[in-house]
Length: 160
Image (cartoon, rainbow, N blue to C red; front, side, top):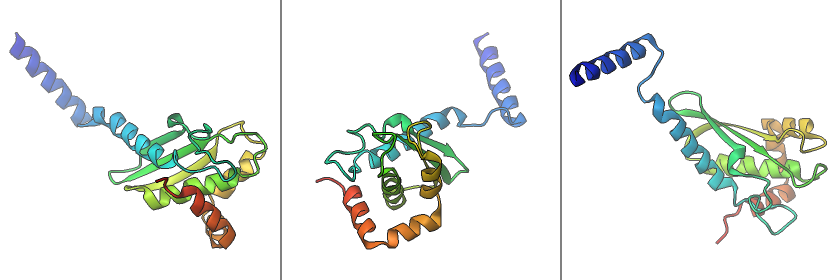
């Protein structure tokens, strides 16, 4: 009976796989995405706030739950960050978004597409800021400004 049950189980999993309803390794997928999300979080949690001597993690601007990773294909991933400014009228929210983008572009060890947003309802001009921090031309122009670049470099510098 045990042998029949094992054969039936194998046959059923094979039928599901051949029909496209199940993929080998599909059960591993959520764990892999969680690991990638933690990898991303470990990179961004140490970014310094532009105004305060604290990290974004200490100020709860970023948390583990603000990072989402989705597989685009076997080699590419979509990384989505939703950060929360300390106050709804934070004048440095765009700069924080820029710091997140720069740090991840430099340090992520896997191919990725990056989307950074302010958490919904946490900033008075979130739509405008979301457009700015996800616009490649605006990001490139901002990083050409030596004063802004220096501030970003100080924020993303790894602590000793």
